[in-house]
Length: 187
Image (cartoon, rainbow, N blue to C red; front, top):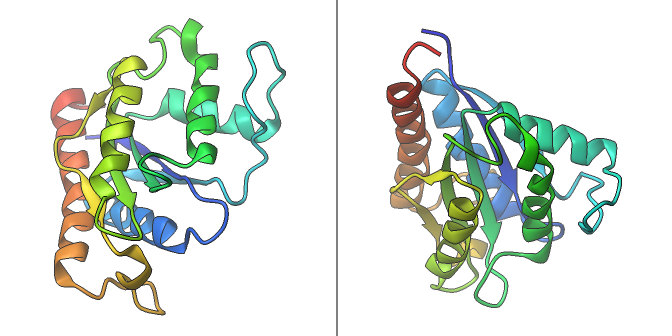
């Protein structure tokens, strides 16, 4: 069976080390389960504010093409005031460029959701992303990855302090690959 392709999106510009760390753990588990992965870290990309009709930058084109060609995605954002970061939402808005693709937007793609919160409200970010996925015609993986108290969830080497955090992130990566393989069969 050919491997499935998963694209990860980390939605923080500054201070988002836990967001990228969480994404890396999910994607490492996905790779161990046989997936090909690619990371889009918004801290390093030139993605201007979306405006309909605005010409896309090369980074926007790379992001949109990666989303188009992926079988599945992992979205992890920091929690900002009960929702996703503006930077993250803006990257999602650029997926509007996929409206005329043969399989418009995220049709037939499964998206795994995670959120890193400073407190204990990480599910709010996940709950904010779910309608985004649906509006883009995608499917959400039922297993979500809320990381609470993210500022203390990982040690200096980027390893989870609590085994439950590692288990959740790794299980999400494995489960995403399992579901994608079932949905797409011999891709």
